[in-house]
Image (tube, rainbow, N blue to C red; front, side, top):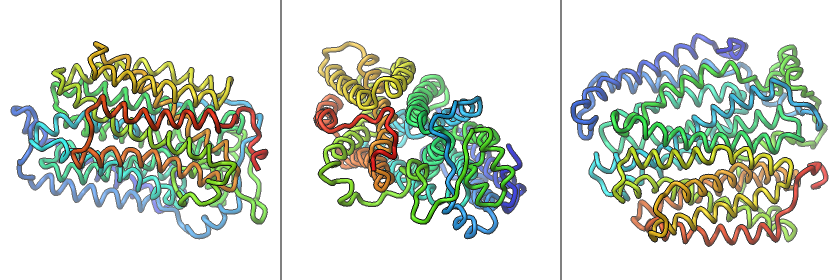
Length: 525
């Protein structure tokens, strides 16, 4: 942990104490989990012992104390000062070791972040069995997790402005650690509450990582860097979730997948020292020497914004935070075709990622595969998808941004057709169709937001990326809403139904999508 984060904040002692309280609070839940060992870790209906209740209070107090410790002094002045500063990397700056190191750290942070929602699919079969509830009742768990993520991305966008990017990443890691007690909860309702809070914590990672990349990357490299980090984070997260499910659930039951938040959250806190503080935040705090050191490291420079001038990096990075409703500016005759294509693609991606892929493990279990085999098959699919992230990034940066998104949409369609064929018993093994689906859908999400941030005029750019990010969550909330109402179609039919909007998005994008490769963003005005 880097002690400089705590300069002119309320105090490193408070953050340390908060972390210790949260970790101890989680550890107090472990005896309850271990007590269930002889019964295959079935804790449903067991009463909570006094240790667990004490642990819960410790976690709540700990998060509050850690948040207090990270709180900067003189917040108002910082916000006012930050509004007049822009930190940018020169257009053609070289990538140095600092850039690659930051990208590696952010990939690990995103893998841990994506792993959480991806795990939902792998705990569902065990949860349904243990609590003996109907699948539509259990679907409330992912539903609340998603609602938490959507609220989290708005909340953390605001918190990052107050706390600075680095501190908001640390604080969301502390929340992560606290929510690992989901694995020791004896009732489904407690699982729902914990999953909502977990989503709230997870919503904080993406906006902060994207913001750091937007601020430190030279604009020529920014697009592909976002595609690479986002893509590796997404595939890695799904691979981690399915791999852990295959490796650990046969012995430790589905509950272990939630308890993993403890080590992974602590890992994030320890990695905090490798994440640089935002130079803009340091300048606004009057810590000029440190800011210049960070700027030398990344080859960036700062300038004061003229009256009415907007900071370009803020617009790119805030696309997970403030989404205004799309007004006429996104739907003008010149933009309506592109906006429609990207909106439908985002909704379709949400349906696949938070619908199809979440239902997949349960569907395989229902087909008679064991949970271990199902997880192993899905982990193999994710492993196949790994190298394609690099291909995707290469296509985006060297060939064509429009072509890369078109290709990703096309591969996603192939995957949907494959899942339909699998359900119609035309294909024997799920690995290939699911791999295509993971490859395509991860390509879509990795490219969608960077592409939107590069293809809209500055005055609507933040709104466009915010709107599209909101649609990705909207698709997921809709899919889980169907589950709750017991209206979720069988997997094959679901794949066929999602193929329709994906095909529409592909057709619209081929017709209205614009090429952004090598485009100077100022030309969009």
